Image 1: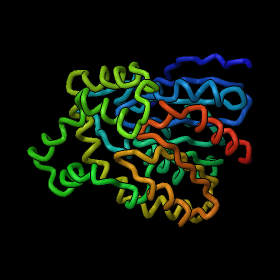
Image 2 (image 1 turned 30 degrees about the horizontal axis):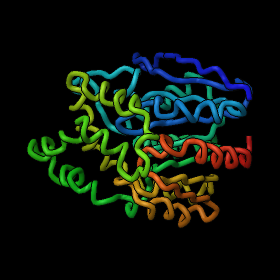
Image 3 (image 1 turned 45 degrees about the vertical axis):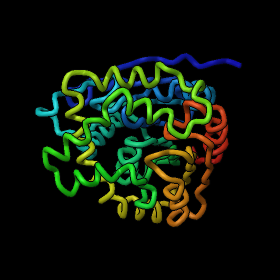
Image 4 (image 1 turned 180 degrees about the vertical axis):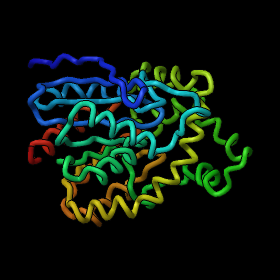
Amino acid sequence: MKTSIVKYLTTKVDGLNVFYREAGPKNAPVVLLLHGYPTSSHMYRNLIPILSEKYHVIAPDLIGFGYSDAPHYQSFNYTFDNLTKYIQGFVDQLGLKRFAIQVFDYGAPVGYRLAVANPEKITGIISQNGNAYEEGLSDGWNPIQKYWADPSEENRNNLRSMSTAATTQWQYFTGVSDKSLVAPESYSLDQFFLDREENEELQLDLFKDYASNVAMYPTFHQYFRESQVPLLAAWGDKDPFFLPPGAEAFKRDLPNAIVKFFDTGHFALETHVNEIGEEILKFLATLPE
């Protein structure tokens, strides 16, 4: 079996460096992978080789994450609209005309915004614990929702524990039956970036702005209904943040959506990359080019 070479590249978008991983044949259908919190395109390191045998795979780091630029929170507006603006610029810079998107966690509201703005470009959506419905939000969101309702300094400070090493590891291990399957470099690299000076502040700004994603759920639902975009939901069913009902809810607006559950947590690719990769390949094979 031939394994595609992965390239590690950077391009400038509106004055900022966007790092990305790229693999697979340049003339093959494109799959754009969008990561979540608190990770980066590194989360796709094991999936990229699976997909890139047949597909042109591109996985950028969002601004503020991974190896992309992370401007100071007082000089950059850390909102999901703004993160999407840079991914839109990235798509335009690379000249991507038609592509499928894989979204996870924070990558979901970015990807869904991208799809709403560019419906003609999107061939399909793979959502791995990428929520778009209120019933998908667990009680784990309560402290963040409290901050949405009252953005006081006290409520902001109450969320600082979300950026600690203990919480990062908790996100990786919760719902995982065999913790030896989780590579330590995954949560260690995430924590390295979280521990950069004042990075915590930009993360707190994004926690606050996550309310804008929930406010956009009806817009996302309208896009799903009108486009009937092919969608695969591949869900770790022990995710402490995004519940299985959030995956099932896609069928309300997309009756042909495929929903698959896996016995694992939030970072399902850490433990089930081969099984999820197989489902993604089957799904991608059904899409129009």
